[in-house]
Image (tube, rainbow, N blue to C red; front, side, top):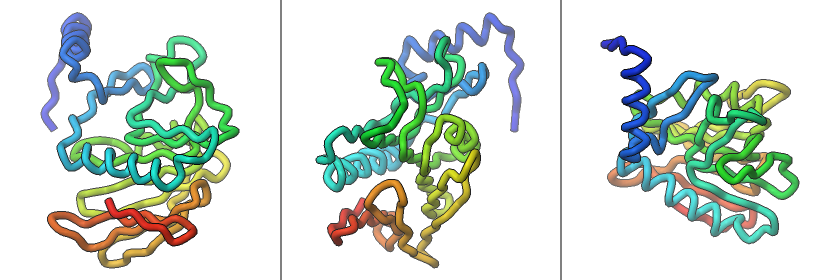
Length: 203
């Protein structure tokens, strides 16, 4: 991959311009390293929006439950902008001990969703998510299409469920009263979300 070496001043100017233009909306900082995330394409944004709606319709009536798109998650009491991640969707259940700091959450959600874009490093976020006590992470991979459920056991995540067109699953979440599977669709595969009472939503 081609690399470009920049001075500290040049890097600061680029970051400032990204923030001023709104291009930094999906950027993150990993232990002090500024990470420029690829802009989500239309399909990515559509998936996130429809999944957010399905979660609201299926479980959103529970008192104290909170669901967010692209919320900042940090592990730092001070200078939180030096280390934060932004899941595509975050679900905080009643009793979650993370603190709402207005600009970000100190601590993680119970359930997070990452939608893979070309060139991103979503799976490399899993150690951070384990550190902030995320319980499950649903990864939606589109290259090729596959769903993965990662569950935290002690201080690391283990993949406990997958669904592809060749092996559609479904697999249940331990955190939410839902199961997920990939089903055929046009122009892309669809994600079926099923509640324990049998109600279904297709994304």
